[in-house]
Image (cartoon, rainbow, N blue to C red; front, side, top):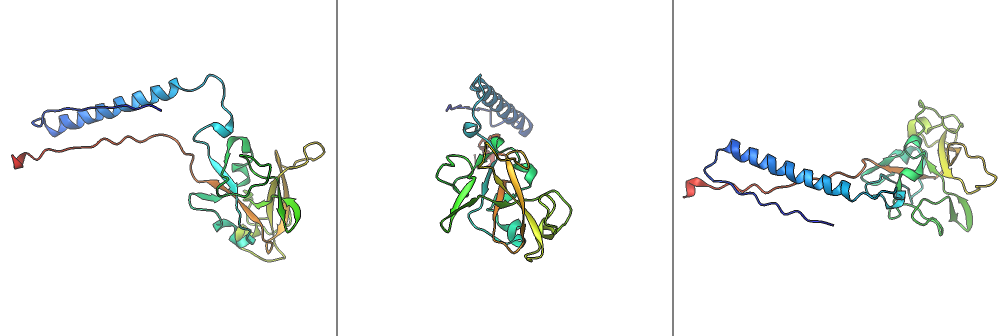
Length: 212
């Protein structure tokens, strides 16, 4: 943590153009100091993904929905994730406040969940990047672009592998499957924007000379 105190003085008789130029100079100086300080504090060794600030967040919804509700199941500031947005979870931060967790998920996503006394894969609906399809093919079926809740139609779900020694993953670290659109399944959600950057606010005090 650090603090920068910037004091700007100017003659009230100065023209608006000169005042504006002075304020722009002050903003530029403050931004330069902030960036220099930020770069100076970056550690020489890479930080772990879980401790890196500004990482995009994702989560597996606590609520399970039919295929035609998947596109609207995510919290404000998040959207229904495409498979290609969450393919590499090591580049993302899991939101434990919004998402499902398991006893050993730690700061990461769950691979298995306990439901009705049984252990089940922590599956969630996911966008495929494919054209509108109801086929029972993982990576293609998307409940007709997530508008169908018919048992005759299918969408794609994915979950993280829990069999590291003998399992063969379908996409990176993920296993994929097709599920009927009338099934209640959780949803993979990802943050709309990557947090980061900074904003600078300087108070502008204008002296009313007519009151003199």
